[in-house]
Length: 214
Image (tube, rainbow, N blue to C red; front, side, top):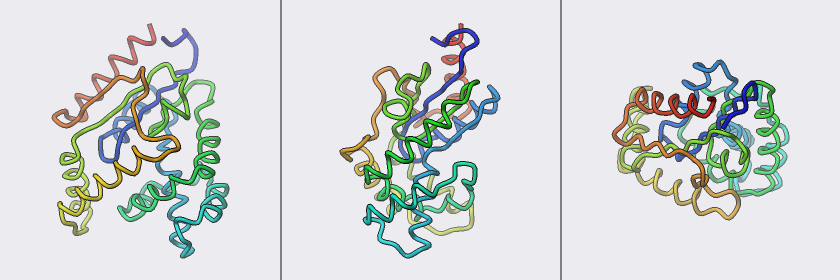
């Protein structure tokens, strides 16, 4: 339940290509709230390391890159490459990197009027006290098809089987890591978008949020 006049903090988690990012942006726009895609913070660390030719498994270098990240300077278009996303999943296993980025993310979440954050550990780690939490998911095949179609739409080339293998491998890495694994919070509302349009998911989420505000 959201206290009348209190901040509207919404936590959205889920695996890659589940629709959580699009849903988060729709919710943020509808309720006029600032939005942070926390995945971009890990992507920014990965991109910085790739650009510098650094080993993604180098925890010290990853920590230095994380400390330098400016949340106000995240560029979604520059960070959207599939290779950067794969690298981000490797960078995210470093506990020290997660600690630094979680601290930055919590600072963003603490805005007086509220905010919308989406990622993989928002409801469980970053904002466990958020009054509204969602876990957005879809089958690996559906998510791989979405990613494949997105790459083709943007003029790239990709093999569906390769994308599916990447999705399954990334799920295993994200769900199996020892520090802050991807999983739904106990009190999260589940939205399976396998056979649901983003508009339908948004309507369902909005209904839940409005009920929590009563």
